Length: 97
Image (cartoon, rainbow, N blue to C red):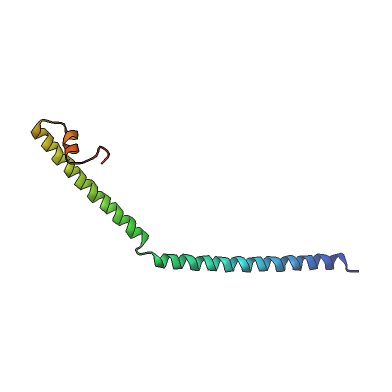
């Protein structure tokens, strides 16, 4: 018959073996996921930060052009003595634009 210490040691060894196997499995999964992330990043056309900066720059340009267009339509409306919304509709600019 095995002594209680032997059983306890055997159980501890089994648990350690199981934990080591789990750690190895998790490390393998981590490496695989990191590899997938690296592969996905390499497929991106541009650096994400550069893309965001480009979109911000384009939004600024759009807003400047929109402001100029609204200013010109305001001048046209004043010259005609009409409301700016009427001029906008005439030029096909929707209320939400």
